Length: 535
Image (cartoon, rainbow, N blue to C red; front, side, top):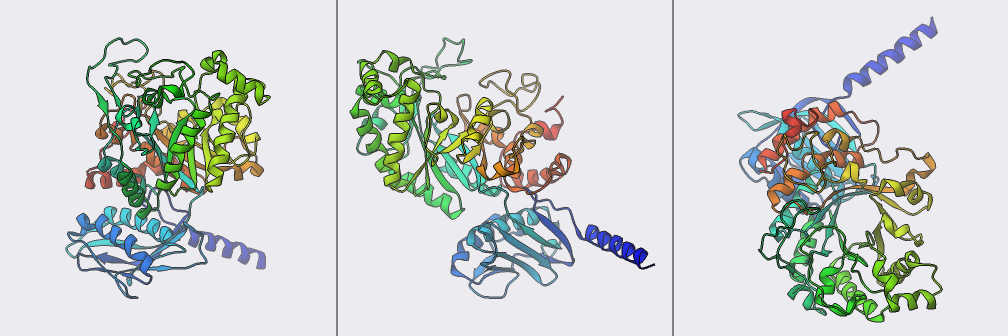
């Protein structure tokens, strides 16, 4: 009899827990959400109370976010009582938060202001999805406990192939923040344009920031150009402004100064940096150039260090991204300076020459208390354990994991937002993109599993995931948004949500997020919502 009672009690407890667990409209999906009796109505007269001064700015941002929903910007006061009360609890993890809604009001608690900000982003989505009444927005009672799976949740924007204004970059940051992204990877230098002011080397913006024209159509076959100069750059004051703007939204800006390849814009500005004694021009086509920095010349390292000395002063980020990808060895093989360097340093080949370059630059940055991130090609020839690998090539996955370095996942067939979004891109008029056969549907993006194929002992090496947006064929910010959304939401959930994921549940929640996009006048791709992405 006692055994039967125990079983019945257990079943009843399970039923109660199941009944308390509730669905929310929130993306990324919270770790835990349970029902609370009652509801609370936010109105234009509601007050946001902050117990700590450092929570004022998150509160002000939230007030701006929900102003359209409530018809007014909520008042923020440093006090203990209000409709929405924000406070700190140091027992929680850095990005963890707790959100409580009852008939008495709303409480958001975090260990840090960053955690509180994420709680407010969740509340922002609840407000957007809440029931509109004569009194305001009615929020159903619930308890949410939430924290991210991974520490790095990134979004990369390439501003080199096509330039985007300061206002557009800030808009990109706003969109990232909405999805609880905490890292903005800013791709600032390329063969097709140098976008960052370096005062020691003024020719980088006088010459390197502008290409005379741009190829029209498919890069691999087209011989037609638009005949229109394209360029732009960010002054150091503009960069400081953007870094500050991102920091207020708890996003770290990680600059990428790609080297030793993808450097033709720098070579065009300072011809002596190349292996060949010739004049270079900023590239007008996409793809990979054989012309790269000459690693055999000391003047190259003087230039690199001069650039990075100014970069580290502009960006307080822990990491500096050095690229290291797609660097052909052709010029090095025929360059007497590079061959001499190989002999003098006892290097095996040109692969080790690139490693020599990366090691030397990494040592320089270490003096400035910075660490490096590089694309996974930096593993060729050997890397230091302190380097973080940004993994985009599937063929390098096993080797990169085996090295024991920190890894940020951005596999191209899951995380490259410039790929087509539908199975029939031409029928759906997606427009020209880099390669016809590269397709990333929303479902595919959502299927990213950071730990797929790994042993539990290897999980700790995965430090984050990131969505990348390359802009060879993306020339307007309207198109940036359409390529980014809604797929960024899928990547964000891969990096945040703990536990099993369910695409159908994600799709349900995405309908609510879509409404928020529309309220904020954010453009997004319609294909998934129209049901044509996988047909």
